[in-house]
Length: 426
Image (cartoon, rainbow, N blue to C red):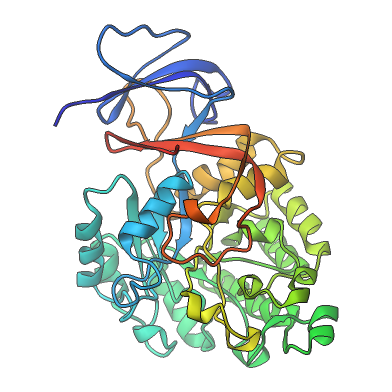
């Protein structure tokens, strides 16, 4: 295969681990590696030039919660459409959730995901389900899946009620330094819940999901992690008390981390006043005050990662009554734009890269692609100051369930480079 040269002109390099961090340089990529980094590069051979008014590059983003429903539910999203959306959103890697049909729960399932995607520009990191059939009753063949490349274990949005089973899982996975990811809530307190419990749920006559449903489960799982001297990652944390519990436990030295979804920076429950089913999300979007709290918890380091929480839903399950609609929204293409638009006044671009690129690798033990000469080229290319509008016709996902269609953002993904290939947005 012919090697293509990619020349990134006057790119600001955002990589806290690189000697070039914060510097503006020409960067030449040849094949799979960074060939040269200089103030000015002149080439006598053919190349593709990548430029923008305010070109930035960083180690490729990794999304730690992507749902691609292959096998079994490809009508929502398959690998082709889902990975195209990831490309468009600036991700060079995605962590594939196991809630397919049947779930990803044995070593052959893990091997199959790698085989399907070995030639794709996106790195796909499969997770295995923590319990058989994701029913919370019996632990899966975790070690076999780990040996075949499972990056973590999770029952995704299904919270595990059985504390003994949870404690055994934490004890077991610590023996081979693997990560369990959990979405925390008490199932009995969430039955038939539709939106955040509060003024809006009362006004709209919808059953609420209370903050405490999350908080008591997070408190339990922190205690179990401390008791087992294990490791745990909390997904899409959504309340002030939950963040404070996590912050306090971190200060005590408990080995935990947490993420939020990008939409939690911009959505709040009062927006549901017209029953827009694209705002039916789990955990539910909380009241407006939580946004300031989330920004504070990003600034103080409690929140380690921002994910997409990409959850495609077919049109029939969104164009219906609110009570009958499925939870979820597509999000791979809007994650960075939301982060940049909301956070640019509050944190540095370096912090945003840390949340999308550096910390996901640290938590999941994924090798870090430093931006230096002769290193592997795994790059996200973006312009943090370009304004653009998210249009339905440009959505790469099969599903179109997003509340952000026709919204203008600041910060545009220009493309990615990975595995000797480039994918550039128009």
